[in-house]
Length: 304
Image 1 (cartoon, rainbow, N blue to C red):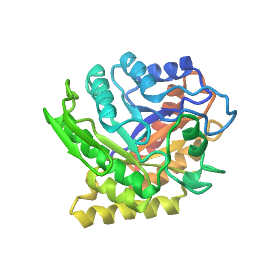
Image 2 (cartoon, rainbow, N blue to C red; image 1 turned 180 degrees about the horizontal axis):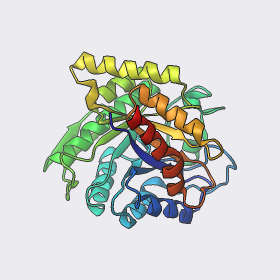
Image 3 (cartoon, rainbow, N blue to C red; image 1 turned 30 degrees about the vertical axis):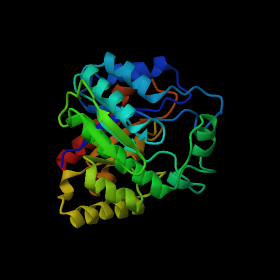
Image 4 (spheres, rainbow, N blue to C red; image 1 turned 90 degrees about the vertical axis):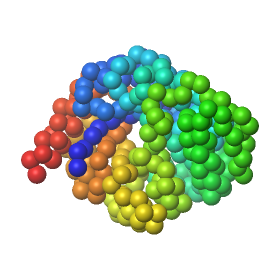
């Protein structure tokens, strides 16, 4: 197994110039395969009046300034943009970037109990969606809507004229030109952990992503990996064809602890690690990640 790495700059309480600085630096280091943003409109933690930049707009700006990095949102909320509008946005960005987009998708805002997803307290999507006039849906409906979105994206990325009649979405005579440079479309990353999501991931995803400790402990990670294997077996898919990606917060004070988590995750079969930077970003953040996290892990992995 070849371990690959990305980084994530969560655009919350962080100025644009800092995010831009990290991305441009990371573009110079081949140790980073990709870079990621998120898809929220309000801060999830910290002061409620803090800055948050819109994900796809920011992604377009950074994609136009980089030349090598793959990129995406970890992950796009399926509750925010109409599926075909999202497909048009993604097609445009893949063209702008010369074919470097990875399509990160999640169910988005659904009714969840307090503490879901490892985020302490009430579901932050409640306030966020109320503030932006969006609606939460039951988890099952969220997964079903996501399935329809994936089918719409595939259709409009590959067909000249495309109709779709689903339970939640309808398209008549969709034309989407130019098509994405990547054919049949950008790779699909799906983030999630529930049983229905794991089934969807087995059916459609090129990459599965989940958050690591402290949001998700290793017992749960191992259980979800086994669930993905079982869902792949159910449909006759080789589990090795689904890349397993872990989003992991980085400790600047204790990089050894972060390295330990990564090595343990690799032992569970995770082959891609997204190193999530916490604010404020240090100077030469990408170089620090390479020196303190990536190179030591790869050296130990190759020596094992």
